[in-house]
Image 1 (cartoon, rainbow, N blue to C red):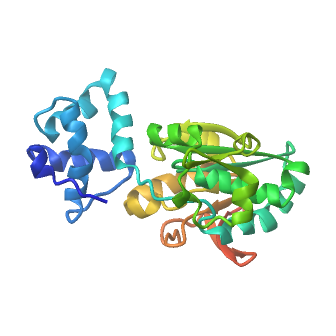
Image 2 (cartoon, rainbow, N blue to C red):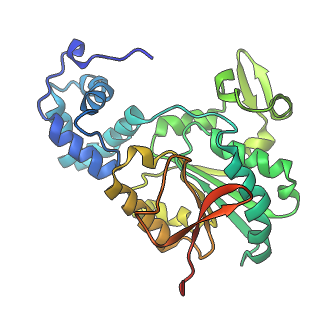
Length: 286
């Protein structure tokens, strides 16, 4: 990937420190002093596209212009989005959920529905992977399962809805499943409508917005993987507190392999499930 040097774009650093703090406050994404250059590089094109003279102008728009800031924040989330994802990623957890958690949850689902939330879903690879795994296990024929997918980046959601994937996104997917669920078309792979139809909704959600998170966090299973590696501990605590206040007792929270909540919350216990580690929401009397 070619790095964009902000100096060549002619954007002065004025306002960059306060913009960095505002981004952290609103998104949870933390750029320490060693990564401030990366933030500048990501946001410099947005500063120029808006016709601003410095990062301070962008800061004022995001902080004080209520009418225009919503669209601008969408652009910020698009600029900061990390597009690195692929099908069949960290499959031990997905298999454990399909084989170990779903049978139990189906048996005790109060309304007969098991809800799964994938956030951040990026361009859709994770929720579609979950759908494939559940379909391969035959669960859609035996139970009512709803999969919801969310991301803070509207551009990522547009790509997910479009459903056009390069071969790099399918590099870990077994060839038999590529043949079964995808059609090659003009250099891209298009998932079958039967597969994409398993995703109930694609929605824009900022993990630090508790009001937006709460309706989806009521799901019995939440996949929130590889987001917290970019968050500060304070931001992770905020998100996990919302999950803890909303998820049902016995619900499963899946985080990335390099992420740990052990020093951040007591609302979840780390448990081994069919060879994978997941967090389980404690009961009220735990």
